[in-house]
Length: 197
Image (cartoon, rainbow, N blue to C red):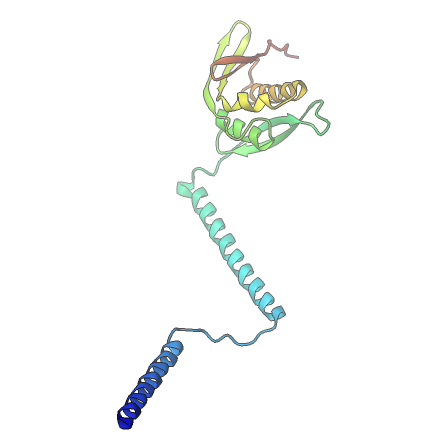
């Protein structure tokens, strides 16, 4: 019986050693990567160099895409210049800035006004039309309801600046005499004919 117990013990030891040996082999083949020792300064420098290379590559890609977009058949490279009116620093008058777009559209003017926080980013042009009458050139502008929500957050003075900015921007760029602004089809503002000097 002692021989049987001894045989079972030897057999168990062999199985245990075999199992441990397989685990060690599998630990080596898991694909662990050995990283050479580096100081934190070297690691930081390498990381920054990698990021700068990646940023340069993205910049080159963006310039290439912009150049290819501008050179489609040699067209699309022309742009128009327009004036945008917005609140001055003391919020008691208007400042202006010249900007450019591929073409002069009501949407381009609203986008420019949004960049100056005159309209909300979700404000869209619902309709725009022009006509001549006995008072001069009249433009009709209907903006989305987002404009109403934006105006509700403003003081009376801020609303006046916003409306003046929109009216001045559209009147000058479309060389009009009168503007009627609506929001969601409801009247917001109507200017009177300005006397021409």
